[in-house]
Length: 157
Length: 157
DNA sequence: CCTATAAAGATGCATATGCAAGTTTTGAGC
DNA sequence: GCTCAAAACTTGCATATGCATCTTTATAGG
Image (cartoon, rainbow over all chains, first blue to last red; front, side, top):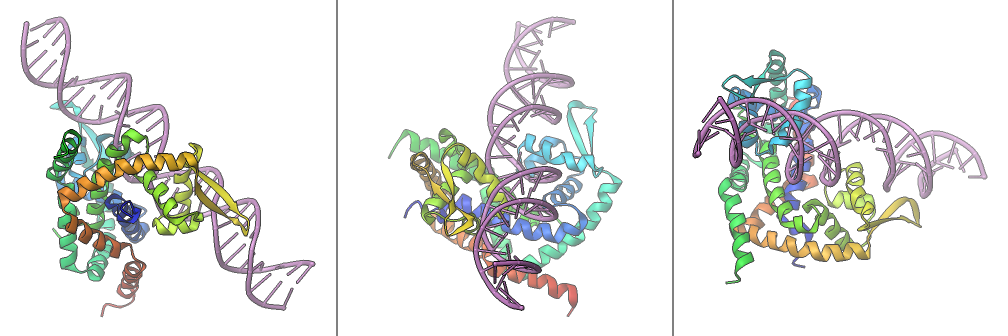
């Protein structure tokens, strides 16, 4: 069947995300944080003190989605939102001391999961897979996908 | 940095899922259904009249997660849950006539997105990517990952 | 036939996300 | 300086998911 759901790129991607997400979540469980939360803390540290928009863009997330997702992390004192003096519309996200300590803890657990992933899947293979996914994430792919839609809709050539 | 969040397999997978999910959701928007919902309807049709557990396994989902996710679809009359006479604990999921009609509608929209995906990413490349993701989804990978964890925890050899 | 355990779901609670709207602050143009 | 469109967030609403726990059935042993 040409409409076999098992061939849907989106569905397969979601399934893989659910499975791998669970494996990483299990590994991070002792810390009380989810893999997504550890990822956000780590990204904030890497970026310094990004604004909501900057972090959302880097994490390929919707701005409002990020806003919701950060709630538990600010509530628990790992992150702090500080209005930018130069542009009071923007909020700079910073790691608190508590957040840095928690990140140090989750980073070790994450390392364990990441190492296991690479050991089982293969280091090179993992690099190659991430490269492919990286392309899917790129604005170039998104643009090409949307352009293809326009063309298909306006001509059958 | 060895802990660069941009190298996290789980994070990259999630980002790709968010991006591709949005592209497919946009394509299906005219139908009022999400890509995940179309996927479930299509899988139910493919499987016939699966039980919750069977569908959850096929979709790589948690049973309770599936239970929640089906709510909107049963509420809107696309799916029906019928207790299995032979095992009254189980519930067989079936497409209603309304569900079949809606699936016919979403299938066309999905086809358009799927075609665009393959046109931009490449047919062969898409097949290869799905094969890699298929391995991540397999019980074999999950077992190997968990076993690697046990070994690491019990010996440093 | 009775009982303990397992199997299949359902439900409460919490995080993960996205869209549509509403609020506040900037900045451009008059 | 005033006015309006745009930018950066926040919030309400809805779906997507998973874990723990509880209820209802089946079933294996006695």
